[in-house]
Length: 283
Image (cartoon, rainbow, N blue to C red; front, side, top):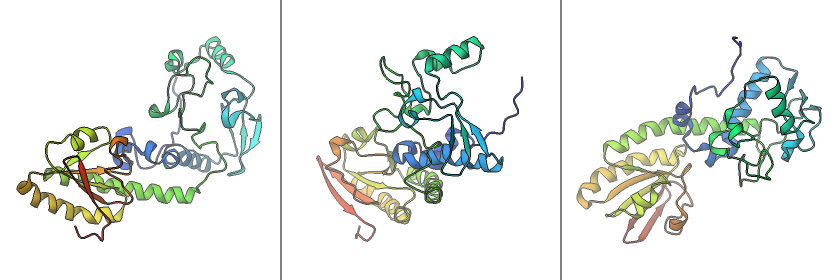
């Protein structure tokens, strides 16, 4: 049976790989409100507008807890005045599961593996015995919603849209910057390999911590590349760069590598780091 569905997603990407190229691989961690806006809130709102929706049906339930604990069968979305209909508001997980089985409806097989509520891969865990069904979502982050159903937000859609454009522009630049850096022997560092590539290096390390969407960082790129191309062959130092927007310095090295601003430049050798900060610094 063919379903004629109109799918709404982020306007600029068509796959997960494409998303990571456009916005970075860890946007969900670096800026959760922006990630939720880009992947969920904006596509939903765009679909509602384009299709002329005046009322929509959700599958939310009170038993899911959190923001949904006092859910009503009918509600008006304060963000846009649309009617929301929540026909399952009074159902619990077991009732839904039995109805699915009884009617032989397709469902996500992860449910049978302990994933009572399923969202993004990086924010979904199994639910332990005695936990609420959405306890596996955003574990330890003191949140229960992605933002799609929240009327009140800390930032307006306009502010988030502007930041999304700025971040996407930055990561479009980053694709070329990574290639240019690699061509002259600059290595790319992440928080996962920081200990090995920086702290465990057998030679002095010159590390730049930057943000792709920072104009000062982009302006500093030719200078850093020139330093690497000129000094690396003479000093045998390792030149490296790390995206500080989506990567954090590991806790054990945080005192050695404080990052009050970007770009920040560090020279690390013998267990000590010397820091140079700010684009006005005489590098």
